[in-house]
Length: 95
Length: 96
Length: 313
Image 1 (cartoon, rainbow over the protein chains, first blue to last red):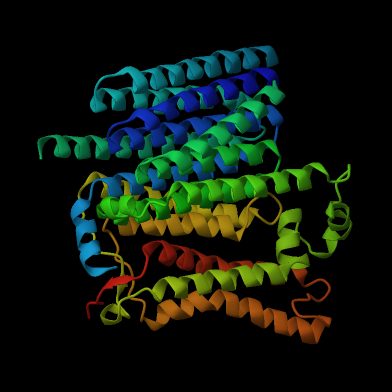
Image 2 (image 1 turned 180 degrees about the vertical axis):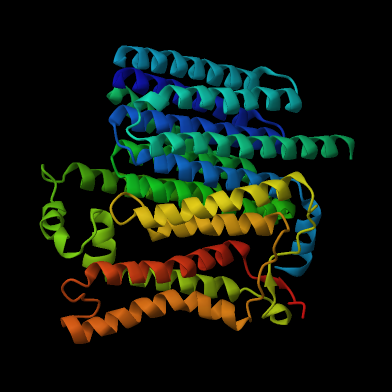
């Protein structure tokens, strides 16, 4: 059973790696945001599988933290990518 | 009983991995941002959901199982919101 | 299988790091960096460092990622200027050479450690009952090396003051960040109403469970800060003006409590930050309870940036 769970974690990691190609290729920012979202979900799945395979219960807390912070980071990403007027004012006032 | 639970874990986690494969393939091969978003949410909802269901028999306590469920619901919420935001942003930048 | 996983992870991380450095566009590089933080979390889980994995997931993946996203967004109009200032080939070869030399020195240092490597884990395990906590990381951070934790909290405060020092004179005392023209019935506002209650409970849970299991005040404070930033991002709350007294009291309260407990320890236990016998666990709890809100507010304000508008009356 642990071997199988580790294998599943490895498989999902490979999927994450292949998904990173979309960041490489993606012509628009939207593609990169989506790839970041996939990475977050894949990472959470991999952490859960690793935790179940090694029997360390605290890794579920790591996955919980990842879920919250990945949500926050992807919202920040989409917000920053889609609010150009806000940044124009910053360029005028700030530096 | 133990064997049945292990079998359940095997099947569910394998199915979840298949959905991750489907999501990633869609992300790479679909032509359009909107269709790619559709593929992405399949990995979010079904991939992680099946993995979580498969891991439920393997955890030690009820609290850990509830935490797993909570993680999946959080990912559902954030995935849905992010997808909506990305879709609106893409639509506005395409038409605007 | 586990070796295959570890080798795969290591190769993926190195490849991703190289790509992040080489990436042309700032946004692509930031996403690469967030992915890098995520993979490092997996590495820490594999090394059984769950506390470090928690911190990496919270800070490296989430907060630093959001910080870099904000920076990349501000740099958006400056692509032409940056291209004009690009360093020439000799400078880049020099940078590559120095980086490779440092990597080589680190590798030699790590590989030439005696086997078994020198460790203080046995000393910690022998003395941990005197601290009253079950998690050895918490015992080290808040009892054996409490001085380091105090200095770290003060360094964060200084970093915040450094960020505030970037304020233009006429905006001093104002609110950080720009006003968010957010649709208060929109999707982001919906998520920002639903997520923070869950996040606050999760943050306090991770803080509380740090006494005996992986966790602690720093990871909990990061989760709380990110939930606060989410409500600010959605326009549901506004950043507080930095001239408000209550804000400044809140910022320094944590480190001040820590320092005063340290001075009390001089009298009662004979050393700065010494704990008298039997009072170690309550004092640690008091320190953590005082530091949690201060750290959360410091981290939230660090990400909000310097004030960019006047405080409205």
